Length: 80
Image (cartoon, rainbow, N blue to C red; front, side):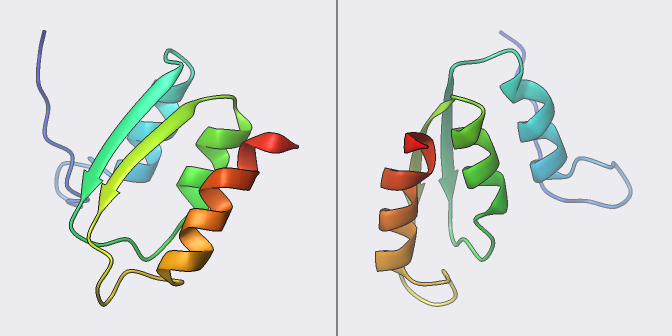
């Protein structure tokens, strides 16, 4: 298996949101580990596409909108 680094670098155009969106068309499961999370749009999009999303994220600042909202969203986005 080939491993690639995605880190939102302008020089390499390896933006995580774009890559996850592209790869989600080929996968049913998405596993993400991040130090913090400030935008849940890509998680909602993956869930609505039918992907099972599992995420490990630090729940301290600046993770937002907030841990409770994130947990509620992950539980409901795929339900309708």
